[in-house]
Image 1 (tube, helix red, strand yellow):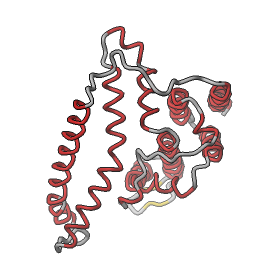
Image 2: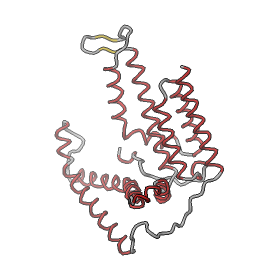
Image 3: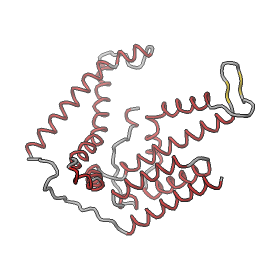
Image 4: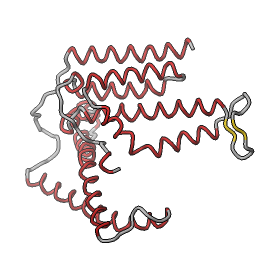
Length: 268
């Protein structure tokens, strides 16, 4: 399971999506999330899903990575589906009525709708980190939040913290995997027993993980101080973000898709 977590990983490429300005990618990703939540029926949701499938096709990201981005949150998806299935009531006769469990057609429809929405929300947000390196992502976040500098908001520091946190997710996952393998080699039963015994077995794993995380944070802070890092004041950038026609075309397509979803809500 740990090897299937791809959050925060960057996969280099030269696709249309990779070449886009990272600032536009962040904004358009937010618009896509709005698109998913604006959709109130399967027609609008289908438009948003087809749009994301086309974007993934243009990015060159493999279907295997899409599945990996979904697997870590599969339990949440199932839990959400069950809640909607069991608690959403309809006006028609129930499909299943055992006295204890009552399932309506409306509940089944809502459950499927929420599953599709959550899945495409996850894969849409994952695409941002798949096609954007952490350094470029930091520059984009800082550029988008730059108006807040006028009120003395620490924009650069905030962007740096967000990107460092994102960057170290794969590192901490790898560290967690090593600790678990070491504990299993010493005879720790991590995969057997009831829920309480498994939770108790996680204590010898979490403590070394927290110690390792604090150690890495301390080493990173020391390295930044040794390089005379003083924040964003007066710093220059190696890569300058520039918008191109490609970004404008992508923005137009995304806004048109959002418009189609809104029209669908009005018509249907």
